[in-house]
Image (tube, helix red, strand yellow):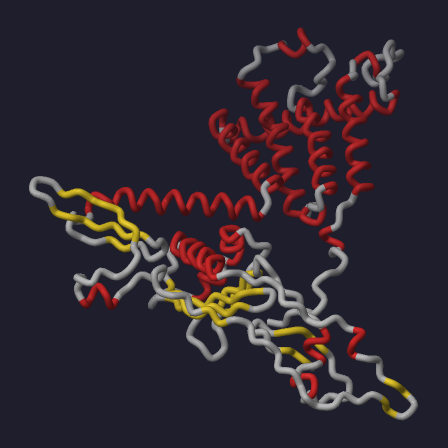
Length: 424
């Protein structure tokens, strides 16, 4: 994996906030709420030849409110709420996620809301209720033209009240989920659901375990030992430290993964070149290397950090039914690659599809899965370091990789995950 030398830069266009767009949507939603809240049938010329009242937003507000309530009924209030949601996402750098899928989902939830309002009027409200209490307010019913036409003209005749309710509630739930939940939220819910299923399976399988059986948890540094007594068998959880000298040879030969020492391969230090650096070529004098800052020794992730990350990684894979064995850990300047060997029967494609779930469990911005690692029968999971080390240009220019570069104009690309300088 190539690591660029310059790690700082301007944020991408998709990650920038859109304050002007957010302000515009917020203003429109406020005007919409004021127009709907102050609306009265006496304000529009469509219901009376001479309007006796005026809307606080003027004739435009009265016309907008009349049209919205006529076409969508009570669901018209969802329009300013949707505009507030769009304004919030543009103000919080989520404007790039408002794709056509979210818009279609929001539209489906809106149509379902109008249909539910029309269904409520038919099934729950007595006849003439709206005319007595809200005369000329809902001209085409509680669901407007959209809701009344959807229910009266189609759903009520073909599906009946129960089928119409189930269909509209399902459409509303799917639309709300698709519009308001992000991929990270869905991955979080999926992870929580898988953990709950895993805990339920363990709780059901616990009574079937024999009292004399020894249970090992490879992901935690704990072991459950059973000790027989005179009249009862008591389970005792003890901290696993050193191997028991009286244990059988078979037990000594199969230690858990968490108790095995981690094989951490640190980033290598670039070897300095002893070749003479040219000072001048013709009339041109090369700039001094002292203009560049020397590489400073930065703090790196400790072995405890790698141990915690490896534990969380193995635990997450096990929750999704993926059994692996931890291999080498290559610690680079910016990322660390954890190599795992899948158990027999485990498909590599299943591990590739868990990148977002692993990033969520490790609280990382993103992870990269290398499947397989070239020249090895393992899968590499690259995780950003908690304490990234800077990659200095001077360190690479003074290395043997720069001195041995055969190009006329060598280009410094950065460092590999192993810390080896990368010069093209």
